Image (tube, rainbow, N blue to C red; front, side):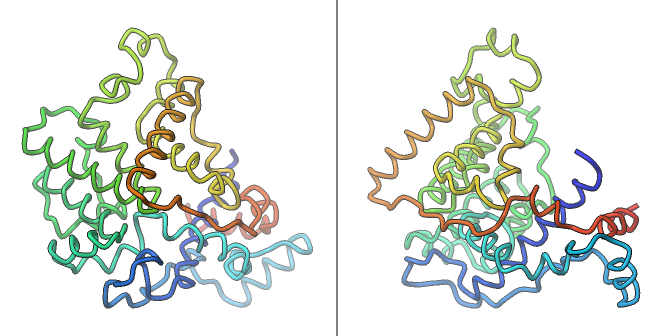
Length: 310
């Protein structure tokens, strides 16, 4: 992938965040009667890394092909905003989660008892931090990737019984959040389960001997985070349309991974039915994929972006 295309992908993903404005003040599930107070619209991230002057913008536009788009024009495309907006209720980070940072545990659990999937995610993140003796007020920060818990990602230490119980509790809440529609909580579920059981071997997906015979790409395809990300796409195939279409294909796949995913999707569907919950419905996209959007961005605009990042 060229450096220009990488820049385009970064920008498009930034654009996706802008769509949070279309959700208004309510980040809770639409079918929940009681919603958390104080969901004021937060400051939106800038689409353009640095503001440029009108003169610079004119210079860019006059030195490029007719009909190409600037980042600002992409920002204002209704189809892009609509596509990103349909994903907000599935996500575990950003503006929909931020208001829960100020809630105490009893409040979070009260909302979770009502079926609020965002509250469930924060409870799960809090359990993760407790397992590692990290300040629980940083739960939303961890969800927003503001810091990394190295041992959670790569292991290396012996988990105490208390830490194991807390990671198991976190996995429970992340799975509940996914069942209640916040499908990308499955990524965190996979991370917690990976640390608890020691990866695909400990999870019973493959034997040690079989795993040792795999190439690097096949090994990577069996990482629980990767597997459960694809499971989310499998549960809601509409996620493979629009902005996420090209990104979803970037995850490694293997025949064994496909078989594991099929089993996990069936397990999810069975649990969903037993719980009496409704299958998540994703609105169809009206947006083109990232590759098509990339082709519309002015090359001079991309070059300028790269120069600013150097």
